[in-house]
Image (cartoon, rainbow, N blue to C red; front, side, top):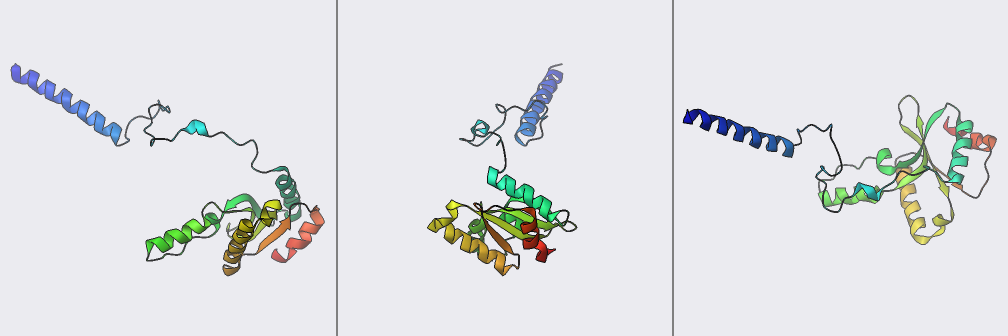
Length: 178
């Protein structure tokens, strides 16, 4: 009888240990997910973030709507595209060079990207230049970004945000890419 109780105790202990291991490895049931029972790294707090009310400012939105009418169904138009979604970093045997090249385009974006409907390949990038583009650090950033587009044969078209655009002007500007 004592050996039977001992076996039950060992079985129970084994079940508890396996359950803990399962939870640590992430195989637990996530139906009851809450922030409190998630093991985030120290300092991370999802309450630091909130949903933006809009993805574009008013100038960008007006330009976007006019661009959609001008381009029609020739291209898909994506706003606010990070450069690492357009360009992949070439392999470098030195990880520091590779990371340096990758980080040089990290958190950089263009205002709009026109892509081929069939292949989703990048065809034309568009930047709306406001007053921030007159700062020396921004001029240097714009030159670097422009050189990446030039090197890869993807046109980068710049517009001044203060200009007014109509559908016909934009259609004429982008006709050469159709």
